[in-house]
Every structure is written in C-alpha cells, then in structure tokens.
Length: 209
Image 1 (cartoon, rainbow, N blue to C red):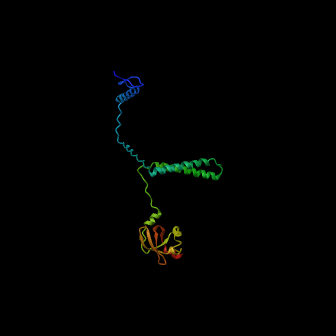
Image 2 (cartoon, rainbow, N blue to C red):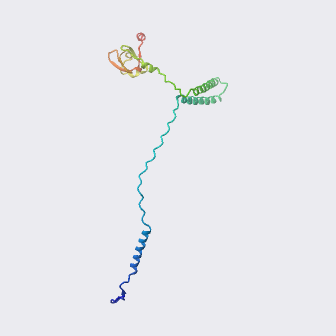
Image 3 (tube, rainbow, N blue to C red):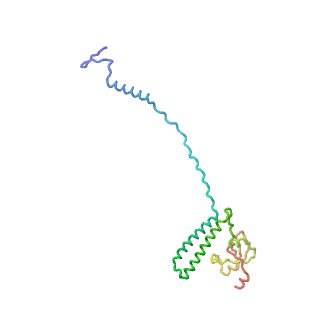
C-alpha cells in the first residue's frame, strides 16, 4: 500500500473511503433492495360505467266502478245521518218537533242502508249510461229558417246592452251552423247566439203580451 505524505497532515491511504460515502452507498443499496422486493402495483384497469337497471313498470291501479264509488258515498251518508239520529235521541221525547225529526232521520237511515244493499248487489260489469239533460235535448233540436225564437230568461242579462227587452222576444232564425244560430232582430240586424240560449217562441203568448 502506498502512502502519500502531505505537509501538516497525516499519511492516508489512497484506497480509503470516508464514512459518509459508505453510508450513502449503503442507503442506495437498501432502497434498491426494497424496490425489488415490493415492485409498484399496476394501476387498476378502467371499467366502463354500468347503466342503472331499468325500473320495473308499475302495475296499473284497478279501476273503481261508478257503482262502487256511489255505494261508498251512500254508506258514508248513512253513517252521518245515524250519528245525527243519536244526537236527536238526547232531545226531549215529549217535544213533538223532536219526535218528527227523529222519525225522519230514522227513515232516512233505513232508506240509505237499503240503497247501499241494492248497489252492492249490482254486477261488477254493469255501468250506468249517462242521461241527456234538458239543455242537451234542446241543443239537439234543429231550428229551421224563419222559426220565431226568443232569448231564454236566464241568458237575458247577457244581452241587455245589445237588445231591448222587447226585441229579445222578436228574433227570427236565419240559419243554423252547428250549435250556433244566426238570428235577425226586429231592426234587421243579425246576431249569433248559442242554441242553448234560445227557445222557440210561442206566437200566441207573444201576441197576448
């Protein structure tokens, strides 16, 4: 081994290493060993987003017949009348008015319960047919040209600014277009009214006025 002597220093070996260098090298070797022992885990593969399962269709609600609805309402009415009957029972029995009210309520309860029984005995596949009202029947009547008509009493306030009261009784049908009626007034002016607003004028009644 060759020693190199320097001024004011002790002879050192050329092949000698400092403790700091040895420590750094040992640390690097330890890190490399740790990496080899625990290699980095691969990133998880990306998964496609899953679509939510479609919601199950809701079952349709059973259709309640009009007969059943009516039976429920009548039954409710019967219970209310029976409750009133119980209240009237607390009144003075010697009072004639109380006796009449009690008899009427008792009869109403009996009839309502009978109606419920009849409704419950109707077959489920039966449905009532709607009846035509009086206004529907009047609208269905076709007014021929030249028919004398008048404005119905309930609709006269709607025409007070257009016609005199006497003129409302002196209308003549010119033509009919669906539910609309074209009429001519006494002065020759034309008006368009709904069929339900008119009634056929009675000539004898008009003459007597």
